[in-house]
Length: 159
Image 1 (cartoon, helix red, strand yellow):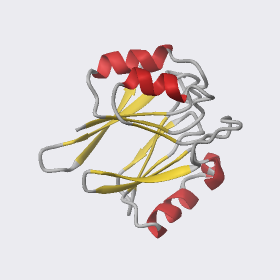
Image 2 (tube, rainbow, N blue to C red):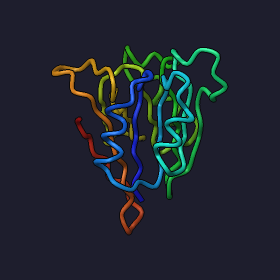
Image 3 (cartoon, rainbow, N blue to C red):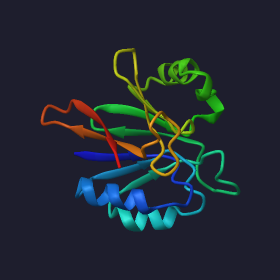
Image 4 (cartoon, rainbow, N blue to C red):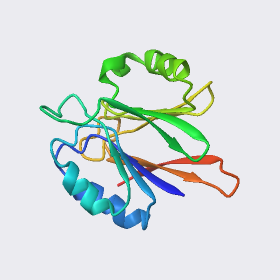
């Protein structure tokens, strides 16, 4: 199973479409907020099940602020992250994930990729596929693949 994880498209889809072409058929797409009203377009392009949460720029959106989903054997909390002060660090969002019994928490908002698989929960941010803010400012996304044994492998990708 292959999952494409993106965030912060902000209505700009050239790089999202490039990632979809590059990754080939995917089984699921997770968008971590700031789709800015383009949810239907993203779902149409993905051609697979899509989970999208609201970001701080998704004004008047009916999207949920966060969702708990299952991917294989993993309970996953997905959120944009702005309510958990992720720009200051991941402690609050990690604590929330642990309190909910999640194995993985995924967030966006900072436009900077982040992956920590060494704690009690796996914490990841794919960065922004449209407006990156990390050094080098390369648009980024992540994939999560489940092997035959059901274990997850995460990879950071750059456009």
